[in-house]
Length: 432
Image 1: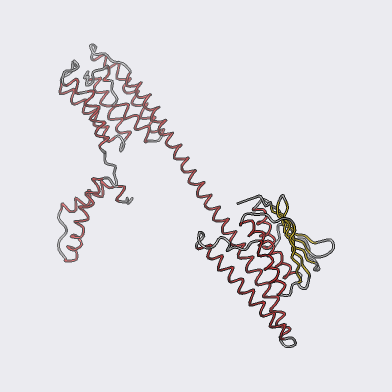
Image 2: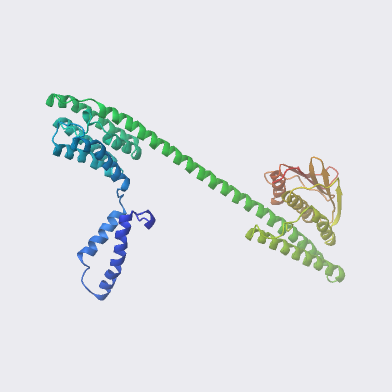
């Protein structure tokens, strides 16, 4: 597995730097047709790769091992604490018990086995390399704690049980071989406490990592939903703009085609309406794309609002639709997003009138109430069947989604007296 230079240990990085100096020479030697590089270059290259893929003990590991030896073995060697064993034996067992702690993070179970073997051997040899009974000290506890913290529960538990049983089983034999030396089960007790503590630390770390992973997943899901909602909003905007403009263009182009020979003035008026609708659609699409590319730029009133409904009604009247616009109630301030949705709902409803009820008269009414805003679009055309919610077109579905986004509701149904009605009720106090 290849690692980045930032994740490699310092010693490995140093050797890698040396390899980076050697490898260009190797390439030049090969290109020049010379013999293979010197042995030290090959060895440095291999050693640097080996070190890069292995954890090197850091200063903390050496400090822990040295601290255990200095705090628990040196007092016996220097005579601060009286010991019955010979100094060479004390020094040898003290070093042997401390040395595995240097590599305990790389080989946790092996370190437990090595420290356990030292303690068992010391009990059988009758060597006391610490001032206390059964060579009491932190060495074995540190090794077991590290194994419980870094290994899976089964492996660390088996290692701890083996260490506890081995040190406990050596007690009677050590007492039999060396009656004058006291022995107790302190190592077995230390093993139990150390394993429980290390397993708790490992479990808490795993739980914390699972929480962080879940938090990242939730953040990704939230971002994904936000992007999906934004795509849906943009698709509704594009649908409303393009559908409205194309409906007008389709109707007026048909009028122009039929009247271009008999009534050229009417045909020119129809073509003018097509030009106006096309330019309006292009302007709105440019504004929409500008908001997509630069959300924070552009004027705040770039999006259509309720104040633009009279201009929309005038444009449709110029296109040949018999349309009446009316506003009732006392206007009140609402959020720009709600105003945009109200405008798009009215625009789509009027577009449906142009497409599905040509020649019909239509009326749009904006009613301000204390509890909200009501947009009503009606026509007296031939009417059409009420669309089921599952099979409704994109227009009605988009209008309903816009209303429900603000906690409102939309009704689209045929009128008993003929024609079709779209009624959108939006709570004006709902801000997003």
